[in-house]
Length: 297
Image 1 (spheres, rainbow, N blue to C red):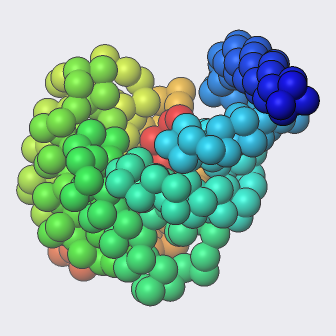
Image 2 (image 1 turned 180 degrees about the vertical axis):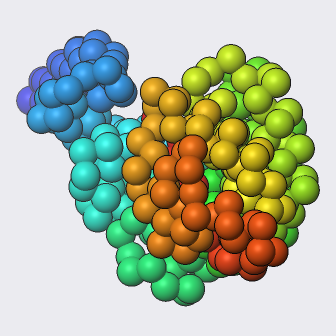
């Protein structure tokens, strides 16, 4: 009987010791997690290896906590994507969705990564759009989300829906992001061939914008609309403003106009004779091949 009581006492002390050890490990782990979480999410860091190690540590540390493990996988996926590793990033997002299937952000991210990793086919674009719709059903409503949704519709040449998304992006945009949303709408209007609305929207952005990059793009789209309308004077005025904007290089744009519309430079042009002869279709053809510049950042 004494031996039995002694054995029970030893077992009790053993489990108390082990439990205390786990408690100590948990406290240390929690302190480490705070540190690694900051390192993993530091967008200003240029040390990929250090950030990747921190994110991977968090994924292992929270192996029994699905939500936190999914967050760490998502953060690592963003890091991988920023460092030109989209294939691995997509695998991390898939794992995050498996652990946390009701997180809108993960579906949004998966849709974006699909279009980078997979071949540019209609089925890939459709899958990306389905992910965006799932994200919306789960509560994604930010301006940036609707901008991406507009891109998903644009990839499928669903330009009316893209324009509707652009309008929602403007409605949801905070004042600090309003110019970017307005630029997305300009692109949607151009692809929807709504040139009168495009010109007025570009003009409105020029009046409101306080940033050089936004005014440059507004001049570019306004030139596009005026070119289609055969307004050569307005076209040259806008294109000259675009050419002198410090954020853009006009050479590629001029090459396109020269190839398709006889355009030589911002001041003199063979397009002038085309306008006098009423060759509006030639000018419209040139405008139709202009590729809008990317928004900086």
